[in-house]
Length: 259
Image (cartoon, rainbow, N blue to C red; front, side, top):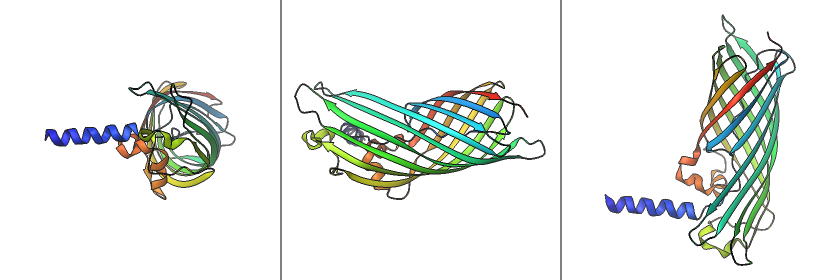
């Protein structure tokens, strides 16, 4: 049993030490708009699976039409035992529009469906004492569709959303990428390479608090579907399964006209 545990530990360390990240999904935005003039903003901290800092805003332009805009910034610094530092930066914005309607005897159920797209860029670079500093970078855009249902109450809101997220990465470059074996993967980053993939992202959003301010807890999954190998190529740590679980915490503030 000890041998098995040592082998698993070694394999996990090998994957972690050889990982390169060029893509992280943002947290799911569940607008939960109910009527014209309503608006809300949210700030979430991605603790697993998604990018680190997420900002969201939504506004209902009619009793059944809503707009949403999101932004994500992910930053990571990791240092190896031999004083080599890896720096990762991802910046991403997206926007969408959709339909929503309440239903049920108390109008406390909600159906919503949003669609849209976004654009991002990412850089993963190694710094050390030598003049050789390998760097991998890319640009990408996404297209998504996201239906969902929710239960609404003054003190608590619970939403279940399913996002279909198509991502195309392009202008993938890796200067001196092969100079560090521990940072390399099986994917060959050719100059101006491109790839695409599609994920399904089921997600539960729980909001609880008062009418204006609510705490947010989100839990979801990343399920690579079409061209799943490409997703693992640009997010190699996901091979450990854990990073496929999305978990985030945040705050939401609601304002605008009341129904």
